[in-house]
Length: 288
Image 1 (cartoon, one colour):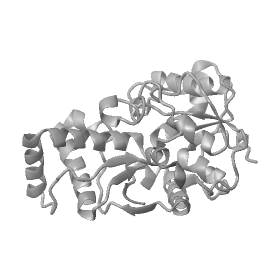
Image 2 (tube, one colour):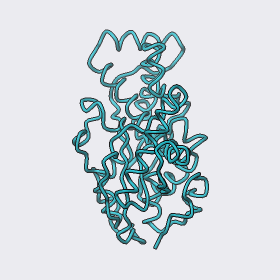
Image 3 (cartoon, one colour):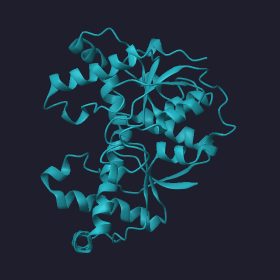
Image 4 (cartoon, one colour):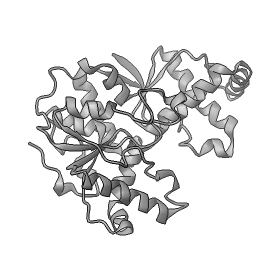
């Protein structure tokens, strides 16, 4: 199984541990990744507010490179997935818009036009669609570890664009946790927005939301939170102390990237998956 990898900006820097752990895990799962050369930031849900057409063209460019590679795209970021799938849906449905965007690409000197032949998926969705990838590879099951699966919002909404499972009542992250040997605990904030994109504009409100999410998982008895989105992971991990103060909570829970949790279940060490780069509750993570 091979994909064109769209890593997104944070995997190249702030969440580098998400990139390295992804490569190690996919190597063991026989998922071959070829990074899209010269990819461009997806716009992170902000660019279209400044120039919608430019944001479309940027993502059409990214997709067209994968099309030239003859591969479908896989991401590990909820926001990147949303931006790429939104662009694809709009361009596939609107011939006039597609021609306009391809004209922009030609004028910029880009060698490929957008055709709409590459699909866009998320690492979590690949594992949900292909549970056989994990068969025989779980060498250190999570042994009933209570794990709170935090979806975030961009992987679920809008349903007509993301379209994997039930966006209002998702279950696929919990299914994966159970396949890893963990106990998937439900908590009432598992689909709530982490606030990452509004951190600078509405700091107090966002820190309150962050605190509520972590506290909700703590009250559910979770020993760890896992999320398929590096932006959500960064928000919850980096701002866990401030979030705790904002809501008067005492919750301290490690927040893991999805591929790190899989790596642990496959026998990898904390150092191998980059857990030493985390900010909060490092000493709280107990592995069998």
